[in-house]
Image 1 (tube, each protein chain N blue to C red):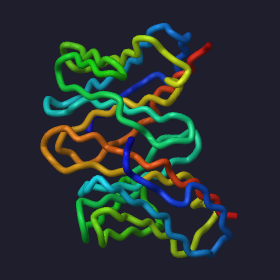
Image 2 (cartoon, each protein chain N blue to C red):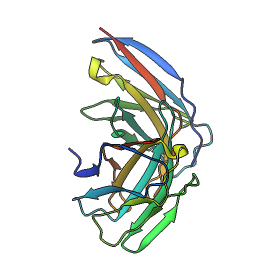
Image 3 (spheres, each protein chain N blue to C red):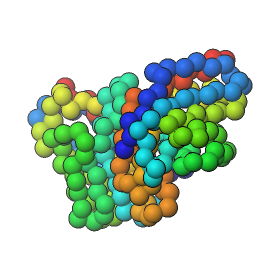
Image 4 (cartoon, chains in turn orange, yellow):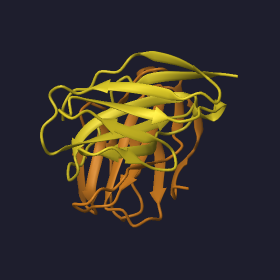
Length: 114
Length: 110
């Protein structure tokens, strides 16, 4: 079992609200990721981090922001939610190293913006 | 990362073997072949990976073509719990980012 957690699992919120999706892992992994996935569609990387105080934008442009103040915590924030942000958000982490390290995913947060 | 091509969907019967193909004709010599799967309403999970030799683990086997331009994920006895989207990804081991394609939706019939 992967020790990576996301809260909330489901969120329904009105347009214009500020929201923060939480992601935590207890494996001490340096690398963490956020993916966005619409129903039945592929995952798109929107943010990643190589360690504390490191954040980078991913392959898909996103209006969300992330922070990495602690190794275990990688929250994603939307300052003003819009219906176009409705999607599933998946967090993942991976150990750093030249040998193979699998990527562990959290259960996801399903966000609906009305 | 090399682009991969997989069938959109496949069907299998329970307790029968399943062979899920993946083409990666532009794979480079240092790219590993990774397989992940995503069960309904869950995040993806690691299945198996390999470089050149065939690989076996408790979940599946990975057969890699000699020219490495294609590979096949083998589930030896499909169960209903194996119904999922299976993603084939090529990436350098030290590379940081997994790029997911559309994957193959596997349906397992009782």
